[in-house]
Image (cartoon, rainbow, N blue to C red; front, top):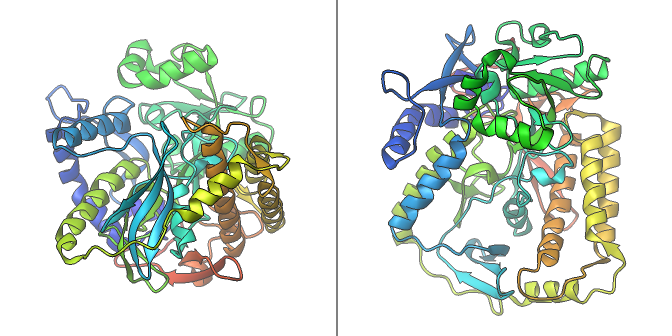
Length: 507
């Protein structure tokens, strides 16, 4: 709990951190019983490795805490739980894309989705919707996120009046493959990998003397960029050194990573140094929820019929900077709590009548896109947006840069009104899909920049060069932003502090 709160730079709600860390051991054992093939020690116990920010005795020394399945833990959890769900008879709708949430008065009553294989629009009438739609890393040029992480779930919630929380806090993972952004997992440094500058120096000794390369991700990302800025980089990047681990250990513990490096770089990691650079990895903010996954409105009252979990949700257990491993733990702990809450409340929720012609607006929107006579290509707008966000709203931020980013995004939103697509077919129309996603990306980009401009301090992953100090007196509070007739409006709520009082971060 201490590491989670400290890693989140004290913006973490400590009641949520207590739930997460208390329930995590049970969650790991449950996953193991469901069939997740965790690595084992020689004694047959679940193996654990070091990860960034994991310490013993309240920060005094690194500790091996991360349970893992080689370097693909998330993937094997996904595969295992999907197989279990199929075995339980769950019905899935693969290749469906959510277009709109349906809200009648205060209650969410369903959603509208596009079936990609046919182009048909479907209305799902429901008593409860749970959003688990992931993050929004595609607002940036360099990201470890997949192409579908365009933040649609959060933005569609915003569009029906749900506020979004702590959107200024986006984590840049320190070790993405240079220029590509493909993730080199923290497992590499957990197994003993070392970051080196042009002089071969293990430079993290200067930034985090106690835990060095396994400091929290925001600390390591800023250290890497500082080395590059001050001329100690190698052609704009730094090196990750795994050569001392040996070929056998890399093959056993880091097989995915070594495969990525061979495929994308043509480098053998047991003999060559890997060029790395920070890559957008995780959104700490999102749709505000309580510890049972219920989505909260601007008055912190649960919205009937709407839940959220995972990266699209903000409990807030990650605060200003997520600790390594806490994403998967968040998913299985709070996702389960949301499921239990749904099960207990479902019998008390009535079927509400859908709005009249609920899909009329979205059908008109799609028709307008497919028959647009505009002159703007969506790829050009998306490329400009991602570059503007990298330039002004990534690891280092300033007031001037953020103001420029907001104006540039607003200009792109005007250009978006003239966007056209080449493909007007129904089946697997990826042009249409990307055009719909772009609207969410542009909207979220503006919200992120506005929240970052408003927060006049540096905390966790949000670093303002014009306000380099953390300001607990004025900014130990969550940012919320909601849609109003006059545009986005920021307001705030207090952080829940139960045990650990804010103190300076020392590594």
